[in-house]
Structure formats: structure tokens, C-alpha cells
Image (cartoon, rainbow, N blue to C red; front, top):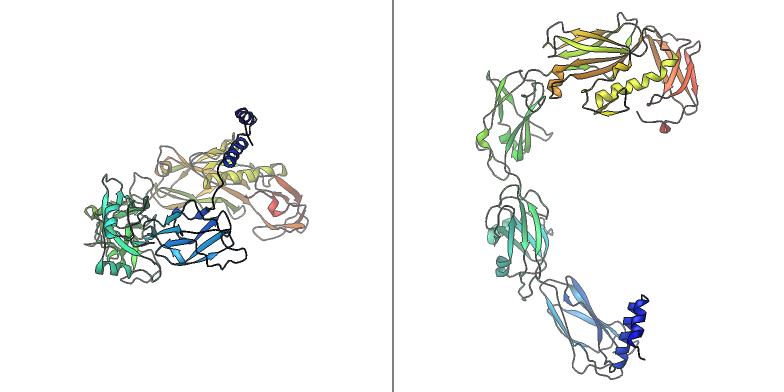
Length: 581
């Protein structure tokens, strides 16, 4: 068979270059001398870990078909690990090791001299095949790779797949430390120190050859550290690692004690109503932590408390102690630590010079708080008054009252669809970082930093006096008047300066329904029941206008109560078909 050059080019132009190459190879093979019997495939070769079996496939039958127990032994084996040879079939031979071949082993398989096929033809081709399991490699480390709290003088316990030579470890293992340009060498931990470290491990947690090593210098705190198990670390057999194996860690932070308290904003002193705390970057024995003291200017002491339910034994370790309030306002305190305070590793505080620490409480924070986002006030229990708790505000607090229903004694049906949207506006203004605006569905804002779109309602402004003075902590009533749905909003620049950190008012809204009616609702799968009674004597109310709305304000049923104060609603959607409130 012959192929001209122009035939190959034609195939190339037709997009069949692979076919052309194969045909050209076929020409070469047919033109060459016949191949002698040889090993077609031998595995493994070069460097391979965890070898359990060696296989060889010959180009021609080597033993009679159906006689896999043939005693023909094709290879002379030079390997420290022992195994058993067998023929899988007439061409394929296998050598099964008794165990996974450990690291540091080199095995050589040589075709025996005079080896012949079944037909009596001598086997030629490549005669020597070699593989190794490479130099000693780290199979497991303690601490585990990725640990972010290793000690400054951490000892690393390494479980290996082969025993390394001490000289090669010292020459080729090292540490890469962030902030240090040079390689940091290692030292091997031996003798009693090594035994003491290994005793801390559960038996069976580590297996195989084990070494313990440390850095030749202490690591800095909170630094990235890499243990480089480098190229050239060799087993006793002389087989060495061919590439670096890198294990990464992070050292723990320095041992510090930090004081914490809640503040109105970053520029103010501690809120006197909440706890003060001292936290540690590493656990401390309760026996020492309990000796931390908070002392007032008048000599009064507060006792440290542990945030744990465990018994307060001397061996208990804690990471924080609290001093519970309330504390005197606008007062000075001193935080004192016991001498020689140290963590579980015996480290002393690096910021011990900051203590004793002087801290101050601010005046009581300003407060304007309604009891809830929505409430019902009886219209016939005297004058309807909406209570609000005030503290440390202006002598007179500005406010606005918007009414959805004007002065009507009953909400007319044509106003039903206004109720739920207004309750949602108040809810969002108090709970979320978004409030409803009259011109947009939602507008991003800091909670309380924007008014609750009251200009969309008939609004009456008022000034709410504080009878006991601006700083007094007191409950004040806001008169509401006739029955109806009211949206009430207080505005305080002092509250805004304290809580928003800006020179602008903060708005505190709520909604209240002044009524003499009480509504009871039973939601059923096929029909539902609404029962309306009076608040003062629980008598049924006939002719009451009733509307059922979803959370988006859509009216899904309307009707009036009968002589027994009952309205029966039908056709309500399933609960899972309605929007979530």
C-alpha cells in the first residue's frame, strides 16, 4: 500500500487530518520489519503512591490458554515489599502486594533472560520497568491543615507514609511566615518531650511513621504560617520527595482583654441601663476572671458574672465576664484586673498596661416609646388617651396626628381600603429600613429618619409637654377624641442626634383605633364567622359594617352583621394563597 503526498494534502483539506496521520503510520508499520514479542503495557511506572498491584500485558500469549496457574515467571523482581505473582489469562500477568506499598520504596521488574512465548519466540523490547512510591509524604497533621489558632511555639505532629532521614528533614523542611522574608528552619522534638506530646492523642488517631517538629523561632501572633515539607526529604532507601507539600495555618491572636459597653453611638459614653463587659481573646480560668472588679467613684463594687450555665469551678474557663446594670448615670468607673492574669496557655496580657481602665456612663438615653405598633382604645372609657413613655427629651415634644376617618363614629365602607395600607406604613416605619412615602411605594431610609407620609391624611399638629421636666422618665397621654383610626407620630431632634448620630429629627409612629367595637373572627375552610360586640358590655352589635382585607389592603369580603352581631363570610381564599403580612 502506498500513499502519495498529494493524497495526504487532499485529506487535510477535507478536514480529515487524523485519518491521514493514521494511514501514514500504517504505511510505516507495514514497511518495517515484523515486531518481536514484547511487553505492550506495564503499570505502574515512575512515581505513584499507594501501589497495591503491578500488571503487565504481552503482545503474544505467554502461557497456554486455560492454564492461569502456569509456573512461568516472566520477571525478576527487586523490591523490599513482597507479593504474589499470577497469570490473569494467557497474555496478562499480575503481581499483588500484601499491602499498599508505603512511601520511600523503589521496585524494579526485569524480564528474565531467555523468556519465550508459547510459540517459542524470544521476548524482546524494553526489558526493565521501574516505579517508586516517592519520598516520605505527610498523610495527616496535628493540628489539622487550615487551623487558625496555632500557638506561637506550636509543635506539629506529622503522620507520614515512610520514615524519613533526620538529616533530610532538617535540610529540606521549613516554615514560610508572613512578614518574615527568610525561610524559618525546623527542629525535631525527641525524647521525653516527644513522648509527652504523643500521649495527648487518642490511641489510633495517628498511625505509621510519626515525627514531631517545631519552628526554630516563635511565630508572630495572627500571622499566616505554612509548613513546607520540601523537595528532597528522603527515606532510608534513598527515595526522596520530588515536589513541595505545603500545609497552611494561622497563628492565634495575641492575648488581650477588651472592655465593651453599649453606647448610643460611637462618640458617646456607656448607656447606664445595660451591662458592661470584659472579653478575652483566649479562655481564662474563672478563678482569675472572677477577681475582675468594676468600682464606682464612691467605692461601690460590682461583681463579675460568667456568661455560662456551667458550675463555677476553679477549672472552668471563660472568654467573657459581665457586670450587670443599671449604673448611675454620668458617673465614672474603674475596671481593675487581677495581677498576672493569663490564658489557658499561660500567656500574659499584651495590653495589661491599659488597666486599670477608667470608663464613664452617659446620661440616660432619650426615649420615646409607644407600647406597640397598633392598639385599640375604648371610646367610652372616659376620654380616649394614647399613652407614650418619654425620657430625656425636649420640654415639649412635637407631634402630628393624622386620622383616616375624620370625626366619624363609624368607618364608612368606602374608607375600608385605607386601613391596612396605613397599618403597613406604621409597621415598616418602626421595624424595617424602609418606609412608605406618599409618592413612592418604598423608599430606602434609616428607620425613624423619615416621617410616615402623614401629609396624605388630615393632620393636626400638637406639642406634648413633659410635666416633670425634660429629663424625667414618665408616661404621658395624648388625647385622641372621637372614634376613628389615628396615625400618631412624634418628632424629636434630641432623639435623632442620639440614635441617628445626625442633627435631624427622629420620628416615632404608631396607630390606634378608638372604638367601642370588638371583632371576633373564626376562619374556616368553607366559610368563616365574624362576630361583633361592644367593648363596655360585650353585647352583640347589629348592622356593623365588616370588611376583610389581605396584607396588601385588598378587600376580599364585605358585609354587615345581623341581629345577633354575626356576619357569615364565604368565598375566602385559602391561607397559603394570600400574601404574607
